[in-house]
Length: 380
Image (cartoon, rainbow, N blue to C red; front, top):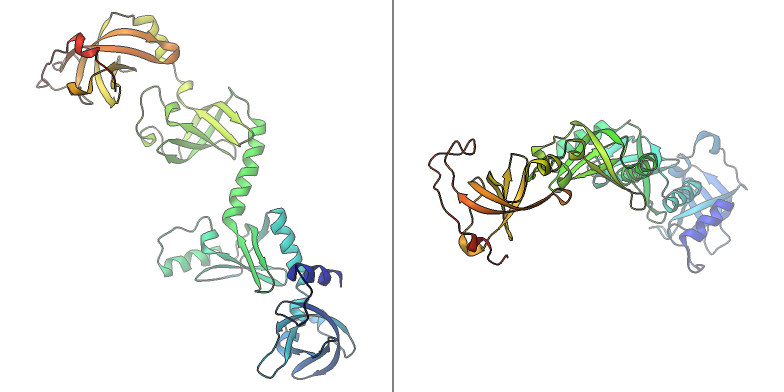
């Protein structure tokens, strides 16, 4: 049979064999049938023996075998305890399924199947005449850290549910057919993302749902594909933790700001749908003005100060002067402001203002004068 020939080439890819090995496909004809099984003439030194248990695995429409019938067999045991060459008709007839599995693995095609059982290691999925296995590590929604009983309960709930899979290992000799639901889901998402990207345009507004939060930003599902709102695009204010702005499951309106179709990446923004405080600041704040503010964070170059409860400017300081810590209230002079670059350079006029100058700061905050000469020291 053609499928058998193809599978034989697939199994023994290098050289023809002189002695049968486990997994080899051979052709022959039945020379005897009895209660123990069938004997098949393979045209070799030894006849092949097909156990009765193997014949009983054949479906009813294939079970009516007669002496003289031409059959394909797969070698199960080259030499058993009685020196028999044990072969299988049922496994040989699975050859088409092995070939189909091999083709699916090479094409990376996603299939749908329904698990019919499980064990402590994962799910058991029928594949034609074969049984595929899905390791627990390849199940996308199986939580980590479960006890053995909790894992069994979770796997049992998946039995009978249609799921997507990808074939990731095909080994007829070892009778290993391994499937992955995790890789199928990941591939489906990538394919879906490619479709969504083709439909998106930079500058359009999309409503999406927050799917996950990372320290560098938030991922938002916009019509079947996740886009990233980088932490710098969450708010016009400085953000340390994306969780301070968004929550998983929250529905948000976002602006599409970047599309990279080659790498399947979508860049989104939350802040650009809000009024730009830098444009308003440009109308009100001029170089030389003295403003009250609060230190928000320290960096190597100095400290950032938030003024007007809206925008931040940098005060370059000499690290040897122990600059004020975040939360300290200060008075600063504007040296320069560049709204298009969202940049403002400041210098300290007074540090540690009493309550009333900046709302919410304790009266006990000490005052400290900082000289202009110190401010102009080298940066880190």
